[in-house]
Image (cartoon, rainbow, N blue to C red; front, side, top):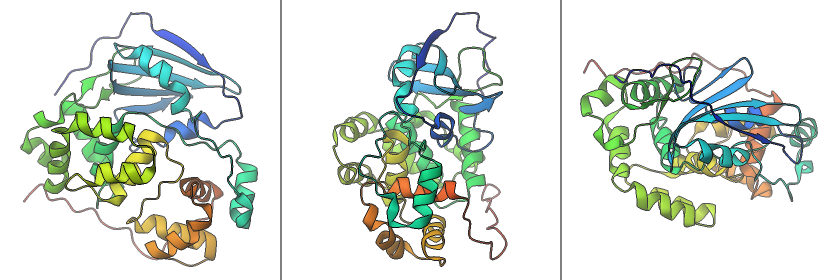
Length: 311
């Protein structure tokens, strides 16, 4: 297990970003956090800390959203990259132009109340893909726990004066031994998918960035064994801030959309039909539903996590 470095005395690079429109910066970035104890992202005293592995190397960035100005400081070889990418992380390139919220009263009311909602992007394709694979077919508790284990045991300690030990994702996912995946609690199909994809990392990232549409990116990601439409959509949302991506195959999302828009649960086909009028902005509608406060009453006990590590 890597040990955290001593507190850094190196002066950080600093930058300011002023959104052109009112923007919920904290909300845009918060979506990237994988659970309350994510070792790669946390918020302390209003400052969002992120440990990332950028194309230029590892970096830590501390982001303080303000009323009109976002201030950031960054440490490590990838510091300049994180500051250059900051506006996209905050949702600067998410344009709701052409979005017609009036098609449903709940969406209209929430959009009127939350015009600052934006979808952020990390531009870190493989890490978005890997984190999405962690969440395939398991509870959030299991997925986040496995993510925490792998990063703290195989990630790289974050540079800078982080508020607690933080870790960027591994440099090479292929080097993680099978026993460590098992200890993390990740099922073998998921670990194999990540390791197999890591062998093609460069070509995957190049093809995904070169793709123009969501459908083209789906074809890139779903060409990988073990990656389906749900994982592809989650990757598009996290890496590219795709305002139209829909995580089909997630019954929680379908139930939430159906209940919010009709008062009844629907399946994937029903969700597809309900969201069709907002084609191009379907993820935005899902985010607005999440922000609306409308939640389907629980019908029974939560699914109990299955722990296969003793097998």
